[in-house]
Image 1 (cartoon, one colour):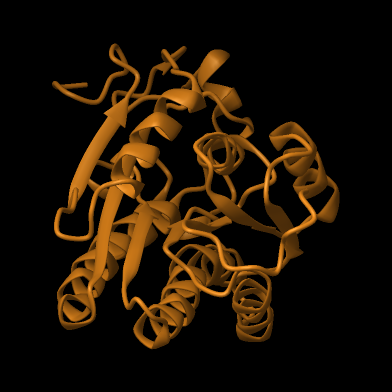
Image 2 (tube, rainbow, N blue to C red):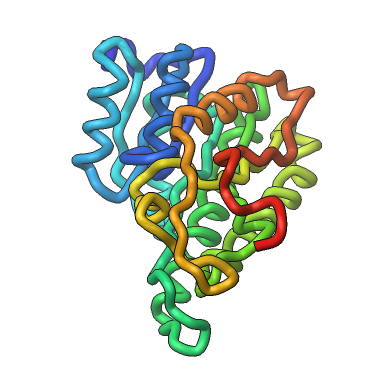
Length: 257
């Protein structure tokens, strides 16, 4: 981390879920392009690893936070305001799949709520805090990019909680985009299919398909997603990628399964 953290930077971002996977890849793409980045996530250790990968010259802060906690989110964005002076980008990335391969009738209410709390409430809380900063700062405005999923369009078997939250993310994106217009706040969504992360490790050994078979699925590098997020992030606020889908080319998504 450079010594000038605390002084306003030309471009600043918050990345949630920055300790691994897509969040880490996006954070590294942003720092590589000269952004100052607040790395947020539940576990301090992985956040420190991401910061180390960014290099000593990168302007980063690590802020352990549970996005489902209003208090943690408030503290996260207060740290951003104090350290960077403004916020240009929120990458709303933190998410959880919840228990895997659990039929609807067997899913515990507590497990349902845990997925909703992180994937929907957490995204809302972060967006709300970002709005407050972006509306008040000078120059006004900024951008929010929500991490959706191809599950916002088509479910996997036994994924009712995750799929429901990703459909909800699409509604959140549309509302934020509309409500942000008067304040120069743009909001878009990236729907991702089969990026190679810990969350998708099962794809490489075999996952349940809609026809009841178990099959290995192709994956793509998380860095391919990060390049798309960086493109969205660096557009002028007069332009917005509202929705984009990035997926492993040969995954069983387009077509009948």
